[in-house]
Image (cartoon, rainbow, N blue to C red):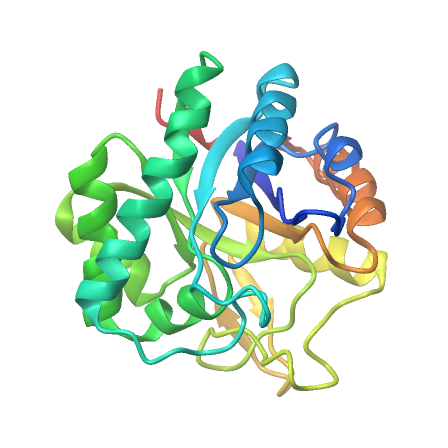
Length: 257
């Protein structure tokens, strides 16, 4: 049996004089990039430079739309309506797609950020609005969502290609959601633990939860958070470990060709 998986990272999250992450180095190891669009992080200059870097390294470019909350980095829930979710996703796709077009590239996917991502994972109305926004702007885009979530279901229902996303550096609950960042055990910082988790998710379609049980999971793309404390270390070690285990690492866009 052959295995293949995409490896994505959230990048382009610097803002003005404030630097976040190690984008240029991480892009040497991932296959897809989720670029912030100015709402939760990023600014026009950062967006342009990040797009240029991704194109130079032949990385699949994705829109990373978030809630309009720079201070909270888009990780605080905001009570938005489905209509507002639709508008903010259309707006941010438009912003990044302009830079991609100007540099001669093409968008590959859309992956909501932070609280918007987690809210849409559970809410059929929010996920439906996000999927509609993506579909109406460009029905060829791939929608990333938490594996098994309402967001992936909404994308499939409306006719989008979807990618079930799993996380190398996060722990899981029994309902398939990620452990809240407010919990001490939310993040995985041990490289071998992260490697073991992703290999099992890809090859066995299983993940262990913090409660000690195992749940089924699909893994089309693996996320490494660009602002994580071990982001670059994980980006270096995980692709090689996947290949050593017989798993091909390739852009999600190539999967659908």
